[in-house]
Amino acid sequence: MEILASRADAARAGGTFVPSPCISVCRMDAASGLCEGCFRTLDEICQWSGASPQGKRQVWTLIEQRMAANVA
Image (cartoon, rainbow, N blue to C red; front, side, top):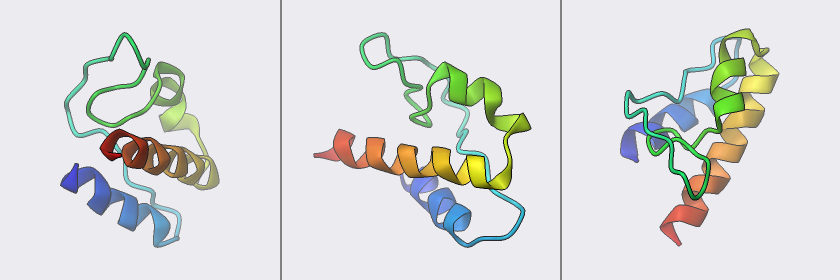
């Protein structure tokens, strides 16, 4: 999760480049419907490349919330 947290920091930095949350651990958890590596849904993964920087940052916000809930 450290890699993902580091990328989340970069995503919050602003600018037009928003790093992908993908860390090449591509397994979907059947119970949560989230990728075990990046905490995105299939829809979020599929839509990532066409999303605006603002849309990508919104996904990052959701990822951070999911990460926090997963740690708790």
